Image (cartoon, rainbow, N blue to C red; front, side, top):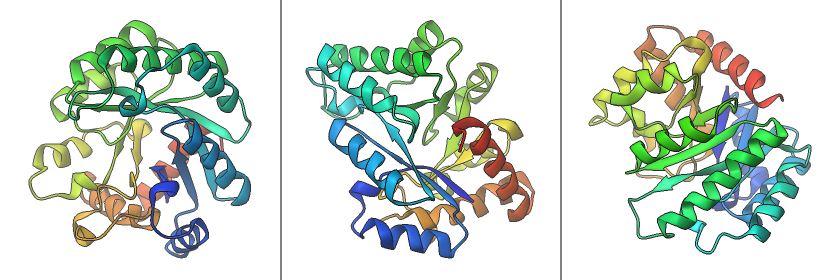
Length: 249
């Protein structure tokens, strides 16, 4: 199994402990994702230290206040590192009082461009901004491989699939009130499906009162397999193949 999106730097336990715990339950590869320059450098350092860890570098929309040309240049340099296998997470977030929307837009556009320049996949965060995010991707991300991380748009699934974007499910798909999201997990084409933790957030229902860790992606994967009517081993092979093709690891 793989964890296509986690934040090792935000988890409480040391990286070595998190990685060992994941390996013990069969999680062979972890993509740890940067949300600003400092955490992106941390992601690259973790990827250098652990064979099973790979990095994504990005500038989260909630961290985009004052995004500048210097920020773009720094991110472009980090993304060019061979240990970087994706750009982002980026996108729009209107849920929290975070960065001004125009700054989010500048950061989003820059990361789309960087992903296109380097031929690396682009990881999208969208919250209370689905129309804005989809419009931006349609306008500017042609030819870029797009991953909708922590997918939360079940009513827009067919639109997203039609665009060829990858759909990644996190632990919230297992929540009792997420019936529409669970139904969507059954409908994603085989070659566009991923699973993730977004650790330390979105702990699967079985451990919901605890902080999430990369090892717990197996619980989300078990739930998604059940929704799709396949056994865990089949889903394991499927997402392993999809992630390898997409991230080139």
